Length: 120
Image (spheres, rainbow, N blue to C red):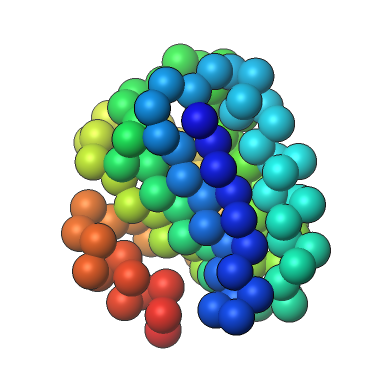
């Protein structure tokens, strides 16, 4: 399941994937991000938690790339992605390059480091 929730008090968009996720859910992710981002002021931080996700199919990766692009286009100044799967990290790096978000993105396996990055 894909969850996205704006936190206006922290100027943060929290995105999380838990359990199995369908290609259709991923295709809707960009629209969900765009809707929630309207609750934030430009310059917010995207907190993306993908610890519950492993490597994905090319179609799912394309949809994740669109979600990354939506984060960039809706006013985020940085994106921190928390993950566990090294193959997914490589896939995200490739998709992020295509979406133009790698310069604003850092990927983490340590939650405390991820939180510090998002708070800075």
